[in-house]
Amino acid sequence: MGPASVVTDPHAMRALARCAHTTQWAGGERETWVSIRPTTLTGRRITTADR
Image (cartoon, rainbow, N blue to C red):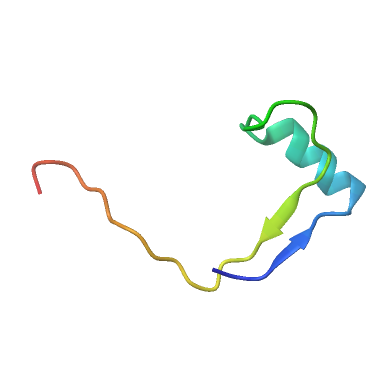
């Protein structure tokens, strides 16, 4: 969880488009990037089997 904001800086948008390894779920082109700054992180820890 954390605050989200739309990325509007052209340099940041180009960098995201160049480096992000994502595909759109619904297909088609998308030009909007959203930045999420995490304040809370939850989930499961995955470790090797020999631990």
